[in-house]
Length: 125
Image 1 (cartoon, rainbow, N blue to C red):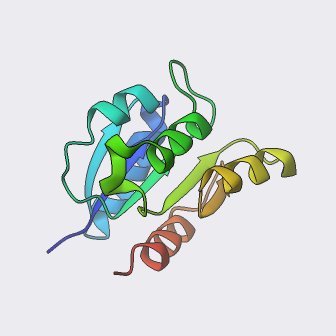
Image 2 (cartoon, helix red, strand yellow):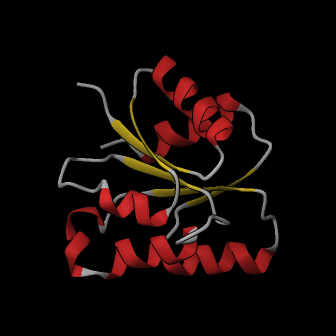
């Protein structure tokens, strides 16, 4: 059974690169354009890992992480590991993401093979 990864990024080209990379490694992919869109796609289906941008319209990545980790409505996803994939490299932003519940921080531009390694490591069970 293949594992499911949700990609949340307002950049279609980033979503495409990440989706292709993960599909080539055997993952099923759900795409969302921002945090609001992502929340609307959480239907109770098992998601093994979420890859999320930080800077997006409507709902940014850190707000999304806080929402999914803190709102009882999303209890099924409370322990889903989240990787922040972003252009933000500031330590303060990283700490804010970590405090919200993100498990890893990858700065764009990224190496697809490094992303796959991180996904494999964090989506083990």
